[in-house]
View (tube, rainbow, N blue to C red):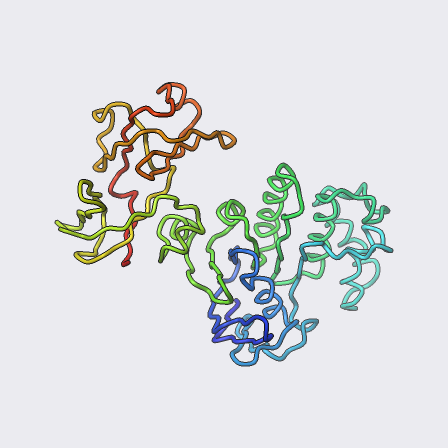
Length: 351
C-alpha cells in the first residue's frame, strides 16, 4: 500500500537519509523513535507536504512523489488535532466531504450522522472544539479523517497530550477504526507502550534514518545493536566473548568468573548480551529455578514503579518483578539473591 524508496530530504538543519519502508495494505504500522528523530517529517513526506530531493513515494502502486497532498486521498490526524475552532463538531466532520463535492448534501449529512453515532459523539454535534475535552477533540479528529473514506490514515503523536486513561480508551478506538474501515494506518509516536499495543509492525527511527523494522516482539526483544537495546528498555547489556557453541547453545564469558548461556547461531568473537529486566527471576536459593543462567548479587536498590518493582543488584543487573513476588521473598537492600533467566531470553549481537 505504501512504499518509500530511497527517500532523501535535506532541510539543512536536519535530513531524512535514504529512507526505505514498505507498509502493507490494512496494516497498523508504527514509526517509533525519540524526539527529534525525524518521524513527523517522514510522515509529512508520505502525506505530500514535502517533496524529497531524491527517492520516491508510492501509494497503492502509484508514484505520488510529486502529487499534491490534497490529491493523495490520505487522512491526517495531527498531534494538536487541528480542528477548526469556528466550526461545530458536525461542521468539522463535514468539511472534508464538502471539499470533495462527490455526494449530495443529504448523503453527506447521513454519513456524518453515522460517524458521530459510531464514535458516540452525536450529543456533541453543535458544540465547538474549545468546549471539548482532549479525548473528545481526538474523536472529532478521527471522525473528520475517516469521513472522506481514505485508504490511508496518518497519525502524528495522536495520544501524547492525553491522560493515561483516555489514551487507553482511544487506543481501542483506533483499533476499531482500522478493523471497521480496513484503513492502512501509519502512526508516529515516541511512546513505546503505545507502539507495542497498537502495531502490527514497527520501524524504529533515529537521526533521520530507519534503523530497524520488525514486529513488536522483534523490536523489543531482538534489537540489532546496543543503542537500540538501550532505547527499547533493555537495561541489562553485558559485554562478553563466545567461548563455545554446542548445537546452538552459546557459552559467553561476561567476566572472569561468570558465563551466560544463550540460544544463538553466533559461534565465536566479542558480543553484546541483552536481557530484558522482566525476564529475570529473583530467588533466595539457587535451586528455586531450573533456568540455565544464574548470577548472584547483593540488592543495591528497590524501587516501586507503578504495579511492578525494579530491583538493582550490585553486579549491575536489573530485574522487574511484581509486588507480590517482592513481598513473598521479603526482599531487602543488602541481601544476597540469585538472578535467574532462560537461555531463550538472551539476545546476542556482534559487539
